[in-house]
Length: 186
Image (tube, rainbow, N blue to C red):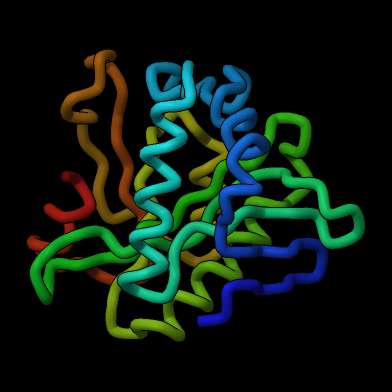
C-alpha cells in the first residue's frame, strides 16, 4: 500500500514524527472526546503510544492510520484509517477509525476518509472483515459507518467503560464469526 492516498478533498498519509504536535492537539481537545471524555489525551504519553501502534501497524500490514490533511491547504484536520486488530488467523478484523478536529466536523471529511480506508483495507486483505467500534450516543460516528455501508452487528453494554450506562456498538461490512466479534470487543 502506498504511504499516501488522495481523495477529492483529502491527502491521507502515513504518520511521521513531523505530524505529532498537530495530532496531539486534536486528540487533546475535549470537543473531540464529547462521547468518551476519559480517552482524551491529557498529556503527550497517550499520543506517543498511539503513534507507536500506528507505526507498528504500517510495518506489519502495510496499512494503518493516516494523518488527514486538506488537499488544498495542507492543514492537518485529523487521523484515521483501518488498522488490523491482533488475533489468530480467522479471528482478525480491520478496525475502521476516524477522528476529525472539532473545527472540521460536519463537512463529510470522516465519511470521505472512511471510504478510502475501506478501499485500502479491502485491497490489502479482502477476506478480512472491516468493523467500526463505537458508543451508541455518538450518532455522528454511527452515521459515518452506515454511510460507508457497514451495518450494525452487535449492541451491548460497554464492558470496562467507567459509565455503566454506555452502550457499545459494532458495525461490520459482513457477518462476523464469534471469534471475530470477540476480537472486536477486546
